[in-house]
Structures are given as C-alpha cells and as structure tokens.
Image 1: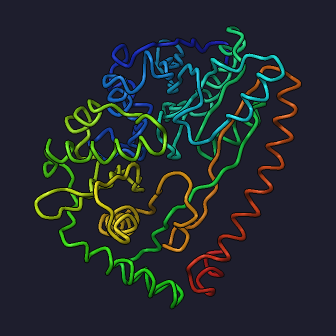
Image 2: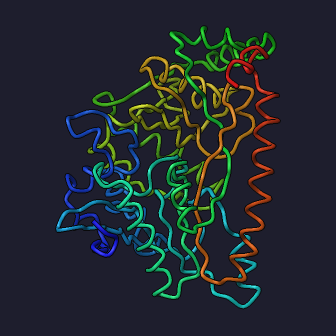
Length: 395
C-alpha cells in the first residue's frame, strides 16, 4: 500500500469519532478490558477535556484531530490542535515566538500534536498496530502539509516517544531533547527495598521527611475507582485552583473536567488526600497507566513540613510498588526530585518550521541544547541519591 492511497481528514470534535475506532489505534492493548498504556491519549480523556471546555473555543487549544484512512479503514489518528499561544505545553517555544515576531513574522496560530496540559511521554501518532509505519508516515506528512497549505509558522509534536522522534527526524522534522525526573522500579517489593539502594545520607533524609509529613496531624488517603466521591473532587478543585493561580495565572482545567473524569475515568486515577480535623487540607492527583503512574496535580490549603514530598513523590512510589508499575513520571521540572529517588530522563519532541532561515536558526539552537541536556543528565545522575555501586550497575 503506497503513501498516495492514504486519505487524511481533519475532524473538529471527538464526538464525531466513535470511541472504539479511536481507541483501536490509541490503546489496542486495552481491547479486552485491560488498562491502557497511556491514559491520556484515550478517547475518554481527550473527550473529557473537550466536553469540559478545557480545550476548544476561547482556550487557545482548538481541536483539529487528524485521521488517516486507507482503503476505507482508519489506520491512525493524531491529537492535533490549532494554537494561538504556547501555554499548557511544558516544552516551551516562547523564545522562538518572540524572535520570529521581532523579525516581522507571525508565529501564531501554529499546529500542536500533543495531549493538552499534560507533560507525559506517549505515542502521538496513534496508529493501528497493523499499519504503524504507514500510519506514522501519513500523519506526519499530512500534518506538515496542513501547516504549509494554511501558511502556518510551525508544527510541534511534544512528549512523543523515542521511536517517533527517530521516525520524524528521518522525514525532516527537527528533534528536541528536554528532561524530566522519573522514578524507576527495580523490582522492589517494599518502599524499604527502594531505600536500601540509596546512600546512607539520602536514606536517612527520606525517612526524616516521611516522618515529618506523617506528623501533620491527620490521615492520608489513597482513593481510586469506587472509593472516589464527588466531595473529594470538591476539595481537590480548591487545591488545583490555588496551584494553577500561582503557576499559570489561570488554571488550565475547568471544574467540569473533574466531574466528567469521575464518571468516565475513576479507575484510571489515584487521588491522594490529606485529611485533618475532618477537612481535606492537601491532595495530589495521579493517573494510572499499564506500566507507569503519572503524577499530575498538587495543591493545598494548609502548609505542613514535607507534606508535598509525601503526597506527590513518596506515596506515588508506594502506589507504583503496590501495583507493580515500572516507573513514576512526576511531571515537568523539579531538580528537587533527584534527592527523592527520581532520576533525570530525556524527553522528546519534534518541530517543523516553515520559514527556511528561521528553521536553520532553530536547528542550530536545538543541536546545542541537546548536547547541554545530555551533559546535564549525566552530571545529575552522578549526583543522584543511589549508592555508587547501584549507579554503576544501572549504567
């Protein structure tokens, strides 16, 4: 089957795409009732964003889902959005936009293939398992063609897989390297097994932090599935608003998102809440994949020593060990995670820029940035909390 036989369609709403058809490409591993590898590219997650007005009109994230069809069969989708800003991406190009506009160009709108507001690595070209290479080629070529045909400045594919980075680079897209901090499960049966791999000083510090956090004067609850109730989301919404207002100015998600997620994704979430004197005072929301736990949001109405570390990082490790998950992805940024057992990990994106001169300048920048990221990861790993023999074994 040749590339010329692929038909590409732009679909403005997931309500026009049957859930089974989307998920057959996004998470075929869950077809028999299993857990998706990536909860964020499922039809139910992306539709919750859309139905809650967390994306769409007025948000700067306008859905333009890309569908690839061959011989009447859907062979792939891409969660694509037209964007008029660079918020909610976590692989930032603000400086590119400023430079391009200072030179007289128009950077926005642009095309973004991503999961909105979600810095978690996963497939961005959601191809049917029988058509992986053909589907990726068609979706990438089609997205670039759409950007060119509409005189858009650029196309960006963020938090894609390493396989997709390599494939896209072979087709002429520019790869970008960034980093996050992930906790890796080396077959630990208990939290103490994990602690045993750390240096004595780091091990003592974590135990001290957990003890301080547990002394906040209340109880920590880990809730998922049927244990989640509307009152828990009422409390968490206050936490989320506080954090969103301080970090982004305006929270990205609407209140309605959490209601819809409660209805459609309760089994995909683990909500960690701290309760004191009959009130919830802090919380951290995680999403559960087949192989990873994804830490997403944190907030509080009371500040207690080390409670943030406990709810966001140590409870996440406990959950991952309990469920046999391979890793915890704790979200963007945060070198403070290193001392708590989260190691620097390279993340990937792909970029196409229409203006040849500007593309050449960005390519030079990305080459230098990749070298800097690789060097920083090497240095940070060496300064990590693990016993030196443990680091040597991992290398």
